[in-house]
Figure 1 (spheres, one colour):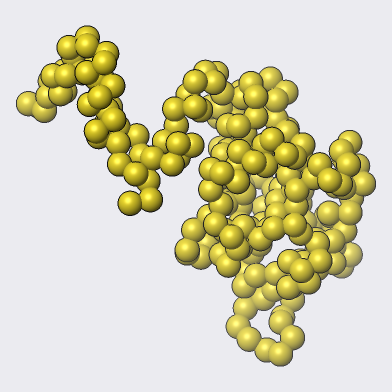
Figure 2 (cartoon, one colour; figure 1 turned 60 degrees about the vertical axis):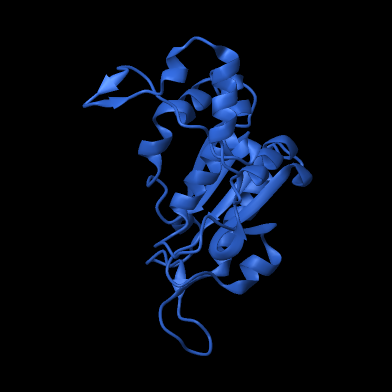
Length: 221
């Protein structure tokens, strides 16, 4: 799976992508991550990526030209057909991202391009004519789309075969089964007087499974 992230801060996610599962996925060749500096696709000496909105209003909007040119170059150089590529833009007013989308995209697409908004948003023509989906990670506003892009990369990568060290981990994950996980404990059995439930120390696997089943709450309740 290849990820391309279009942003005015191309190194903002380097630290996160350089650790743990994402790092191992890149090192193994299961995933590729390419940040693209949007300013490289501007044509003025100030490398301007934003401008004032028509009709007035507070703040600045990201311009369509550099975004379109960046997308054109990425798609032109891509080894995949257009139908194998998903183009997203992170937006507070987009459709909510979830585990179902992550799994579907990992299976259906070979490349995901993510546009990270900044300022007051982007020229609406980007949304209407250049992207496939407008995606949100929650009902709140962030300074930019980069954190959301990182979440998408992480969540989708987990469904790419070979990225997780233990495939069983994915099958058991809470949101993949639409339920919250049962409470879990590890050593020591007693800490500051707080005890691990006796049933978990019993060795009775059937009883433990029944206890866990009772503890699981439906994710949507």
